[in-house]
Length: 159
Image (cartoon, rainbow, N blue to C red; front, top):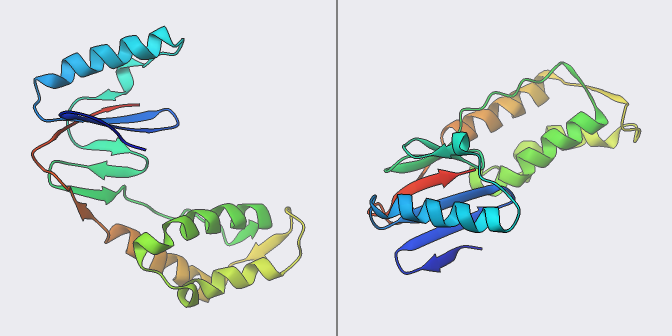
């Protein structure tokens, strides 16, 4: 959940923190205060992971002053996957499905591969149809972007 304090907005997810301030001058003070707070709690922020200028990479997204878009993606998939590999791949695609505007029907060929042997190490062969479905997913990811809600706020990223 975002934490908001006057002109500072912070989004925290696991070990990633996204910070926006109303002015670029506020950023160093916020980073210093946040670093001290994190250190006082027994953790650390690695300075090499702080991204002071755009583009910022946060939770798989590429963020600039003007837009937010997914990082370029290519599905590096073999012709044969184990059930476990397929489940991980489908989990990632399903998580993005609503953002990408993909329907269950479009993903149906991939879901059908789940119906075979239930052993996690059992193999699944990708057909031309399932490869085409993966291409549809990759193109949908490449073509998605969003605009920042408030372009006047500066962004600093500490991971």
